[in-house]
Amino acid sequence: MKNVDVIMGLQWGDEGKGKVVDVLSERYDIVARYQGGANAGHTVKIKDNEIILHLIPSGILHEGVKCVIGNGVAFDPYVFVEEIEYLKKVGIEVKDRLFVSERAHVVFPYHKQIDRSREKHSNKPIGTTARGIGPLYTDKYRRNGIRVGELFSDNWKERLLNQIEFHNRILEELYNDEGINPNSVIKEIEILKDRIKEYVTDTVYLLNKWNDEGKQILLEGAQGAMLDIDFGTYPYVTSSSPTTGGALTGTGLPWHSINDVIGIFKSYTTRVGKGPFPSKMDEKMENIMREKGHEYGATTGRPRNCGYLDLVALKYAVKISGVTMACMTKLDILSGMEEIPIVVGYKLDGKEIEHFPSTVSDLERVKTIKKNMKGWENDISNIRSYEDLPKEAKEYIEFVESFIGVKIGYISVSAERDGFIEI
Ligand code: IMP
Image: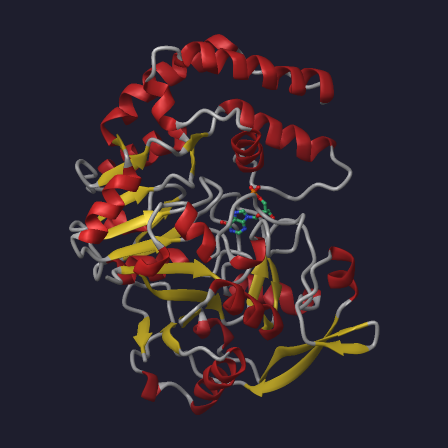
């Protein structure tokens, strides 16, 4: 049975996944997150309210949908409890609709502190979101992480104290920074674990049971393919796998249950944090784009760097993720441009190359080959059918579609829930 679709970002995150997941969620029984943590920021605009969720899947905004935080997620109990409170305040009931994997690893305050200290003292900072993501996954693979389920074992305090001691040594001896107060962390976690207890379960079992029952499941990726720990612009990446492989290891669902992999990309490109960005615009154009597209981080508020749509990177992202259907977002932001440059090739040391380079030094030397597409004048944010889009906008969509070799099935033309065109 193929009941599972994956939805994921194809650029450097911030592709507008939150909104697309929100729109598509009502077609599913279950929405599950599989990687990343509170470094994500999914923004959904409903009437005059802007709702930003960092950890809980945005599917929670649909009453009939159950949401899962899968085993691959970096689970921050502080953010989780805050978001539950926030959702309750805006009238969204999460009881019996929200499930947290007991296998997910817990983000503790020392992870966040180490994230900050490492960035501060490194001569090559990554520009992380400071949400403790890198240190959390380091602990997971070093095999000294603490999983959600372990918080409910008899020796959780001893385990946590050991870890605090270990991380405090790193903070104090390596970074010369202040360590974490063990007593306050223990006290906080004691309270938090009672708050999260009712949500914690074996989600691997649960998701597979629902899958066997024929329930429709959407797996929601955070960040994007170009930030993937293996395939992204390493080391300027996040520490998990936002691509399709991560959706399997982060949920425990079998590969043969996957139907569509829906890849989301913006009609242009943005990136926050540091790292190579071949299609970056000149500063003047970037400033215009940033204001028009409100390109400021949902998690950190940082201004995002802006660039033209990079089809070399996009095609690569489509390949490594096995995307079967694409969705272009924020097409309305391009309105009013006479010409829209689009990257169709890379030259490295004067030679055109076919592949997406794997090293930062190559990516920094790459020169882009651009094609100018014709722009359109009028605002398109109120258009709701493909036929009604300006001819030039359709040409833009069709050109991208033929370049990446995947059907663009959805277009988003405004931040509103209904600003969505299905082709
Ligand atoms: P980390 O995930 O906080 O370790 O940050 C690593 C890199 O990923 C940095 O460049 C961040 O700006 C970027 N990043 C992490 N999460 C997101 C996201 O949700 N959107 C865009 N960039 C992100």
